Image 1 (tube, rainbow, N blue to C red):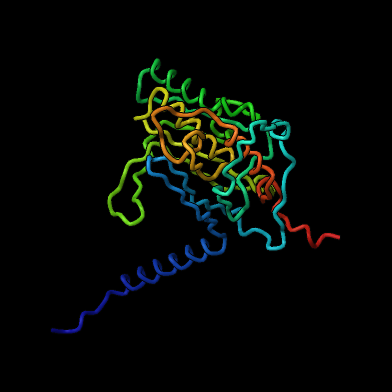
Image 2 (image 1 turned 45 degrees about the vertical axis):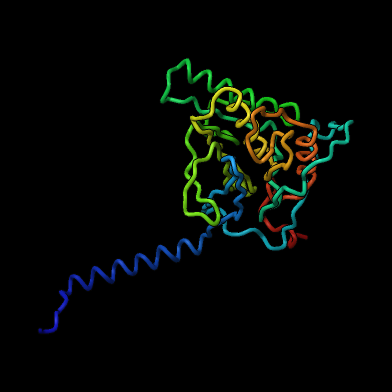
Length: 271
């Protein structure tokens, strides 16, 4: 069999594609891909996971820029636990940008009205979600907004993607998922959250799921080992309200250092 000769146009096309692939790869490496490596899971379907937050505005965090604490919000500064209930702060996971605290208040919340159900059912769903959300307003200032583009936290009635548990190849359904992504605004490092609540959740369990996931979005990036806490790692037959331990944990989180809410500019070289 004779040797096959490739057409010059074919060779030119291959070279062009190769150069574009190399250029695209260099672009992604040059601008940076900021990945937050957290994946906390639970047995019932409550899951908090990261988003791969790509931004051409975020190259890297200045290596000499220290994490700093923000002043405690007045609502948390005034909080006192007279029951000495303790907390589960040891279960909270930090991230490469520190703790996931808000520094600008009120936190803006958008609840997307469902479209796949009747208007009456959609309003009932929104009301249930807001009931779980507004329970947290005692401890941090919140405002519900109607413009999704300005929201800090967005809540959507949508089935979370299937999750494959460690050590198993069988995907399982989840009742809820909370994710966050990072971005910059006027050189300040910011974050925003998206909460997915499964359409299978209803009634008291929907309120509990909203309460639980919103606790994550306020900064409790972990789970409680006790069933009496709203951030308990699994759903229970009688969902608890926000406990003193939940608030104690939230307060300790807001006392911790973070890069969020601070300028990304390296001020260490400024005289």
